[in-house]
Amino acid sequence: MRDRAKALVQLENERVIVTQWTFAANAETGWHKHGLDYVVVPQTDGQLLLESSEGEKIVDLNQGVSYYRSAGVEHNVVNANDYPFVFVEIELKQ
Image 1: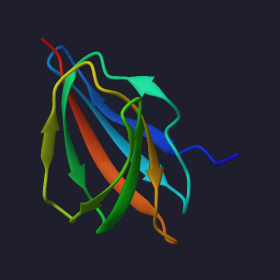
Image 2 (image 1 turned 135 degrees about the horizontal axis):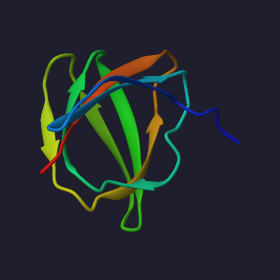
Image 3 (image 1 turned 120 degrees about the vertical axis):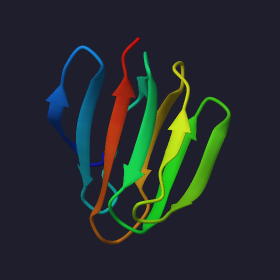
């Protein structure tokens, strides 16, 4: 059983939810489905394991290089590094 990543909501208003996710080595978010479009801003260089119904995929992320995903994504995110990993998730309310 993996440890859970820590979620800290930094800001929430009528337009956005900004959450900092902090992962210990091998920690995970747990399976979840995104109800909103979102942007991820990595705060650390490293790799994440994305587990989904389509299988597993390792992604390389670089500090400050953001990416966008549409609502509906269902997955588990795992820190594939042997060190802590942090990203900020910005959910866009409609």
